[in-house]
Image 1: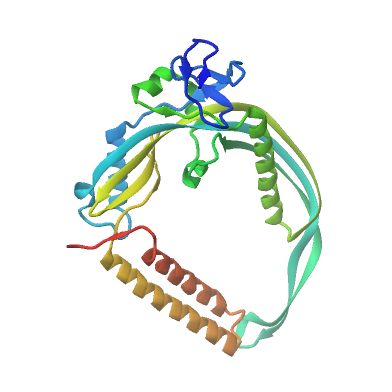
Image 2 (image 1 turned 45 degrees about the vertical axis):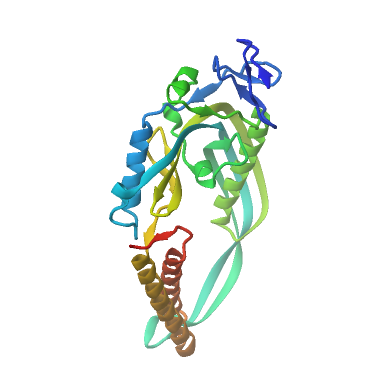
Length: 319
């Protein structure tokens, strides 16, 4: 239990909560009772019925979804959760030196001018600079779904936190288990990782780098998400829908057995075609004529179809 330093009300907290939001007056405060000023929220623009309708409309359009999903599904649970995120504005400047891979081509095939008999790879020194500005969001809790974690927050529509607005929709406002200092450190590391990815697009090996990463404004924002459960047939499915935009963040949905059988058969056919192209390319020396590339594409499509067929998203057998 904690006592609000501003209205005196007592409210429940969980282990590890660092930044608390009083459920009575809505004041954000530290566990020591210091008020936190930069506290915002995204308002709810899609109520429960809107979110449920949007979800079923989206699921009904997915590959393999049953035709009667929109009318046969029954919602069994719906709760609005305001997830805490720290949003940090970061400026990153990276200078680098490294080695990039290049190639020399020798001996064209007479019958295939675009193909070569021999390729020689070598490394050459490269250098450059990347300057970027990032808006990085750090979740205030650890056990958060990865799709919600990666969902882009519409920060331009933020408003100062209103407890009355959250209460109007019976929203659950979660406390942050991450402090501002911790969020700043995580944002700095994330910016460093993004800069590294940019550099590695230009060079294969980084020999030296000089980074200047500055974390500017940081604020706490609560983002509303509808957590929904619905039944179809004998199974229950979970979904998350943005209460601000109606965007389906993630959802499991039923697939018909007919779709899964077709995906399995198609996947096997594409895999066999891909394997055949690989074999011909290696046997007949079509390495540079696109044989391996075509084989890779067919194999990738086949694996994708097999994944769809074997997905953990359950299929509903027509009975």
